Length: 285
Image 1: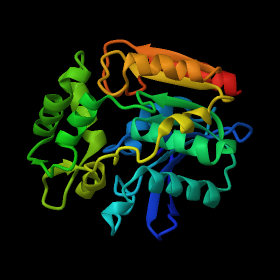
Image 2: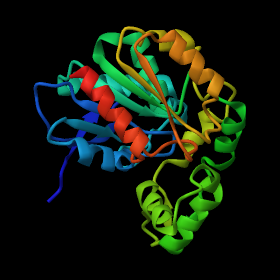
Image 3: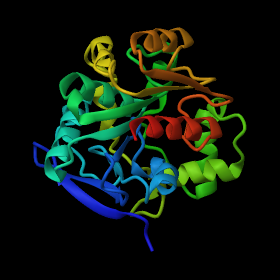
């Protein structure tokens, strides 16, 4: 029996978008989990399964990912559009406030929400992302996103992910790589395994400024009166230590946490990450 229900909502431009809805107490704000650039709702299955019952957890697939529809216009694959899609999710569900957990791109969406609709956030966790993105990590992502590779077996798929992300997860075993492959890939109609996103998401991202599109420091300031957790992977090439320090200084209610021996981005099943999530939720209530 599934722990969640598959639900849909509609974007302003008419796309049918998908989210997983894990039930929980209705006297608390739901936890909204927003994934990274090439990832989907499955990335948060362990977070949601751990919290469900005590907390309602919503895990959307952004447009062009997972079970959400692909956009007709690739120019709509940008953070401001994704944030508007999430705003429509609030409208359609009638949810007023959430605790937002945003990984990488998902964290940018949390910051945009903090700037445009701060009343919707009861608290937030930014997972390995900030208002400034380290150019080295950005270039690494640009090198692999949008490559339409496919694989004959799950073992081949797992080894391919290990090739590109091995430095970020030095302690992973082949079992871990297989699990990651099954979170971010799917079996296509031809029986081959491929990444579970529209390759066209890379098109706007490849343009200068495409990773954010706006100055994100004012957006971060929208979180200054909220309980916030700033999570950084110790080996991250996206969020620099100096940026993390500056973020913590800008947010009086922030807790900064470094997850040891992990790069971009912590999967949130690490002991330090789970403890940080629990402390954040305790502050929210």
